[in-house]
Image 1 (cartoon, rainbow, N blue to C red):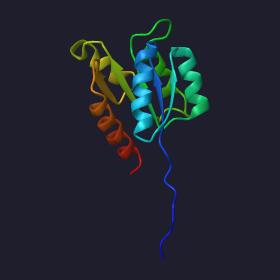
Image 2: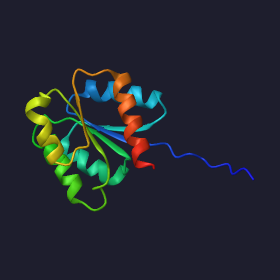
Image 3: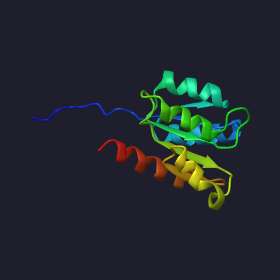
Length: 132
């Protein structure tokens, strides 16, 4: 017997203080079939994670008031958001910063400038790994 199961569309939240970046990433991911919301404020991003309940967060590090490390640490301290994977998308030099990104709870680190195609492949891999 064949069961017709509707596949859940993955939800992604993109948090970056540069609206151009969030717009580019959101458009590309929406075109790939994902449900995407964006936020340009770190503190508001934390609140949006709690209400939107994304399957994945794409997060900039260098933001005013609350940087990406603080956001990631905040998410990982909350039992409702601790399991959400975080991909850091940042202009910071990975040689000096990657360790801190992982220590704060990040799962992957993608350096700006980035290829949307490469980011999409990384998103697919992360989402597949959490759906096993």
